[in-house]
Image (cartoon, rainbow, N blue to C red; front, side, top):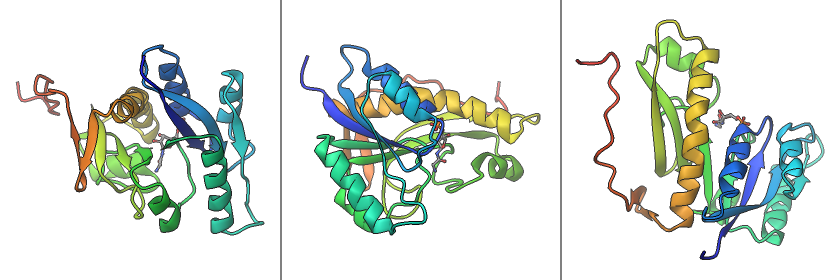
Length: 218
Ligand code: GAR
């Protein structure tokens, strides 16, 4: 097995995407390993999940007592000390400054619960339902300074039904998040996803995948 890419995961809460990454990394042939889980909140539930899995955790909770820059400098120092070469934002709900984003350019990825560029920001599923979209989904992308933007690595789509609430749609999308985040990390760590300009080229033939059409045409 070739060397595994060391990864830091940044969380703010539940950490179910982080848990999906931890599980994927347990496979001997997975090309990445998690060296640090970093949270900006002490009460993030995912911290316990990570610690239970034997992963180093760190909390930098600067709420009310420090600048954004102080938080980010401390985060960069912790991530560099851990030797991480890729950062995965996994439900990390604090805006990052262009300075941090540029420092980690092309080594910083995020998962968002919509088919970006649709519905960046908060209340994604409510807005998707209110807009009446037939298909929603999730996106893993390289992070750029503007919120929830940057070159797209992987997307997964799910149907939106007339009965959906934000809760039921979130659950359907989350299931796909847990599939595509490990996939995106594997593609990057194995060198199969390359950024060319502001697009990501994936060196794998995906042409046999079935289309998702809602309502179905046949
Ligand atoms: C996930 O649905 C993730 O896509 C979303 O927060 C949730 C975190 O859940 N992230 C964003 O909305 C970022 N803009 P998790 O803590 O269980 O992974």
